[in-house]
Every structure is written in structure tokens, then in C-alpha cells.
Image (cartoon, rainbow, N blue to C red; front, side, top):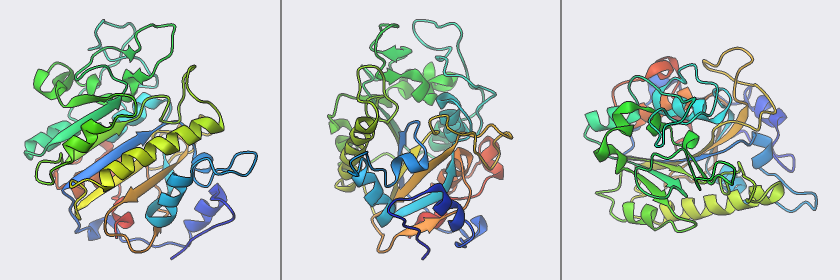
Length: 338
């Protein structure tokens, strides 16, 4: 198995790996999963996270780096575009609908101007059509189904929960549906009891769970959160809390997987692939897949982006439909499964 270690991972390693790794084609996929737990982090490139040290050579992301060394690592994963919102939409709908901003949803309360809306089907539609269950957990959102554009609400203050990181609320068939809004729930502070409770029974654990840390814990930051290396440390610690909670739950069944991904890099590049517009990609980001079945690390260098991830989720959960650009994408998560 190819592995490139030069004290830390680097983009050069990732690019070299592209010529050294051969993966099964998408058509060879036979594995199906019953649960996918997806954690979305923010605005960091591959080299900013995997193996990153501070100026004193102290690791900033020891837990995440250990996950990369032990489980499945995609070395050529890219954001679809910039900024955040279109990447989230790409993941759940296979399109970013021409949106290149972080405006609030047109279904926000109170109404915001300007605002964005996404039209067409999304992953919730596919899951419910197959009678499968889903849950969205947004840290620092004040209550279930919250339609506010941010929290705290002071437009001139710190923003912990941001609606731009909750793509489900940009679709009318979710934002105006009280039953669906009940599935969009808060995580308060570092209390992950709602996650633990949802996964406490293997038979009732949701088939798809989308987890979004707040801006103090997703490596994005806001003005009263850690910054610099401390921001990476805070993100690593929260990822550890989320991942260990899932791994120790009954919902982490042999046919389940955790996907740890980043939406885009910090605007340091416009690298992209797989359906991104020329010179308009979202940068080179980490992507890690964890299942209970790993015995040896797996590393893949199939170029991928959020369309590819959506294609994999659709196929691995047996949803039977491919949304938007995911229809032309490859199953890039499949080679990361043991």
C-alpha cells in the first residue's frame, strides 16, 4: 500500500500518490451501508490539517492525523468551488445552482435581503422515498428547525451557528415542512448527548446523519473563537469528541461509516476537479472515511469533490437516484472502504 510520509503529509505526496495507486472502478461497487455519519469541517487545506505542527513542532491535529494514518484517506479531494454555501449544496443536491456567496436562505426568519434558494431534489427526498431516516445536527443552533440566519442574532457580533452551513434550509420542501424541520436539531456547546441518544439503538439509528460543528470548532473561526494554531487544536478536539461518540455507539454497526470532510480550503487556491468550473475549484482538502472493519490503512488518490461524495453516498445507501452532477461522478468513497 502506497504511503508518503515526510514528517507530515504534503500536496507533493498527494500528487505523487496519484500515479502510484490503482482503485476499483465505480462499476465494481457491491458494498452497501446502512448508516453514514458525515461530519463537515471548514476552510482548511490538506496540508493545514493532516500532520500539521505549530512553530514549536507540537502537533495541532494529532487525532485527525491518526485517523488519516489508520483508516481511509482520500489524498486528492477538492472543494467544488468557493465560498462555503455552494459546497454544502453540492454535497446534498449535486449542484450549487450558480450560487457563489454565503447569503442566508430566502426562507430565513426574519426575511433576509439578498437571499438564496436552491431548486430541485435533495438527498432528503431520496432518503424518504426509500423510507430511510435522516438527522441534521448543527452545533450552537438554538432550537430544532431554527430558521434564523445566524446565532447569536446580533448582526455585528460573533456568529457561532451560521445558516450558510445548513444547506437543507435552502430547499422549500424542507424549510417550509414542520415535520422535516424537526429532524434539524441543535448540539449545545460540547454536549453531544443528542448524537449519542440518536445512535443508542442500532435498529433506530438514522441512516444518514449530517453533523456540522460551529465556527469555534469547525476550523473556520469567528471573532470570539480561537485563531491560528489554537483553532486547529479546538477543531481536532471536537472531531475527537464526535468520532469517539459515534464509534462507541450501538449505531456504529459493521455496515456503517463515518465521513470526515472539509468544505473548501482557506481561499489559498482554486484547485478543483470533477465538474468544477475552470479555475473555480474550492481547493485541496482532507477527506477521511472510518468504518469498524479496518485492519490496515487505505489511501486513494482518485480525484474527487462533493459531487463524487454525493454519488458514493447515493450508491452506498442504495438510494437508486443520482442528483445533479453526481450522475457523472465516480464512487470515490468506495475505494476507502475495507
